[in-house]
Length: 166
Image 1 (cartoon, rainbow, N blue to C red):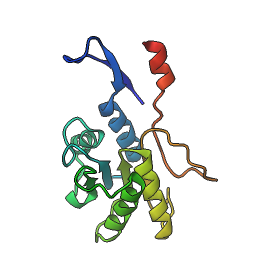
Image 2: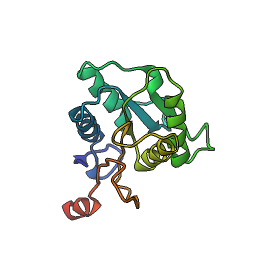
Image 3: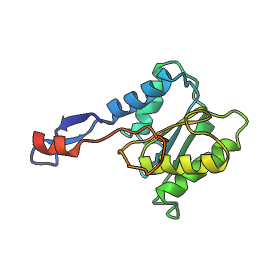
């Protein structure tokens, strides 16, 4: 993941944070490099449907910048404050069920977290989809899944590098 030095008016000094614009660009560029142009977005969205300054909002902007068609039913978000019965894994499973119900389906899903991505991977496998062949899945956070083969492309946030920089 890309880390950036930020300033905040309500904080006594600078702080380091994940650069979600760069992270979204990395994930979208990766999916595009694999030939995917039909990309869904799954986001754990507690600030409103893909609110500004979220990785998923940046991903949508990047898809538009690339001239790709964005289908509204490929954008799936849940607000845990108003729908508190979902875990991130459950939400990822719900994402797949929604996408499988569509006539026109994406070939890839960019998830805002690895736990959502693992829910997508789990449910897609139950539905008979082969991850990497039938559906590409990306996440964020470097969740270490115990799997005999890679199932989720993820970004690793180097917190030790952040700590050394401070």
